[in-house]
Length: 563
Image 1 (spheres, rainbow, N blue to C red):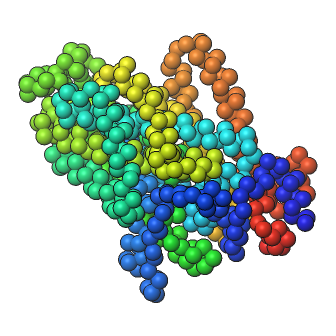
Image 2: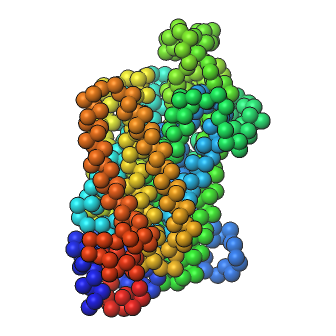
Image 3: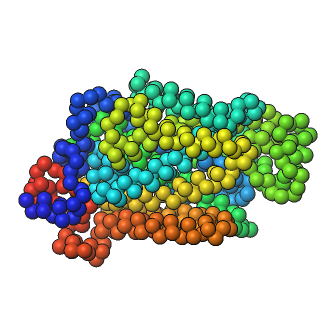
């Protein structure tokens, strides 16, 4: 029983909470719940998609089609209203010069999503479930609260985006709060589409992505961006004549693209395919096809983002308020008063973005833009709700009825969103959007550090654990992304010009950095930095994979021999 004693020494809070089944490829197995056995428990995975097993080719389009779905649902987070707003502001403030940042951020996102998908495929559990079983009680509760904050921030942007789209489509007849209520109501309806089959739900998300592609693609064709400047901005990593405004926008692009809750979401969505995790070849094949599907999905999302950047870079880069005012007045637009008569550079958001398109290119451009924003907001609101369900179920081990879970995750976000909609008008949401971007940027370490930690442990991933190259690359990527986002947070806080807020931010920063340091410590030990394995645990430095692992196997002696 040596392994059991070591498990107790490592982490007294990590005693197994549920009985589990062991397989030869992962010491972490899907939990079985007594509640789940007695009562029906419906989830996104109620029916799993079968994978063709009679295909012997190295690559099969039939198998790729069977695996297609989770990656496209994941890619919607790269197309939410927060990303669209970041895109149009990038084009309006920096022209085509920051497209290479967008390309780089998307590639980094793909690498991180690869880790998330592999964790779900290999272990049969998503990131929240693994965190629940590997971290002590207090840290995992803090981790859950931080991820919930990120989901609430993202959800507010998405619901507000839908409300703005409805306001534009109705020419102001539907107020912001009315749009919020409509969005929340129809989200409830759409979320139950998976009762008619998982593939039908995935097809519906595909339909919404298609709407976005056609809507923003229409604007792209209408504006006719300079293709030479576009390619130069995409592949030449340089920003000529750029200042603090462009730098802040570049940081904002990274923060908007890489979202913490999306890591949790993707690790859960891949569980929807019928894979025999005891078969190493099936697991390897699933990882391959999921990576291909994610690459295709993120390539499409990247093109849609490029459409938006290019439209505003070509048509509105360095434009002033007075130019917009005169143009809107000349075309008889009812939105002329939205632009003051001054020579300040135009400030755009998703609301004013539609307005300026309407002034320059006609009402059709405004309405098609609003349709695209509505599709972006509605789809990302739905995936955000799924993220909330997976995170809550995983961290808290909830086994509530489907309606109760959806109601709770919706209610968490509806209150602050509705308050914002009631007390803010549609023209003054940029400040709130900046705050929400900062909020999500601060939560990034709470997804990126755990995913690198657990995918690097051979006791969890076995043969599919990160190799040395991936450990180093993953560590560098996460360090860079977190540093960039922390810079964004510092810039935002210093712009507040309030001593009281500075003091509050300083106190908050101490607690925040202590918890991030705790996660980093665990991560470094998992990566093999044995010199950090102190506090009486040095005797396990040769087996750092055991360090975080809860003793969840029914046969501890067998696991000790395996490790």
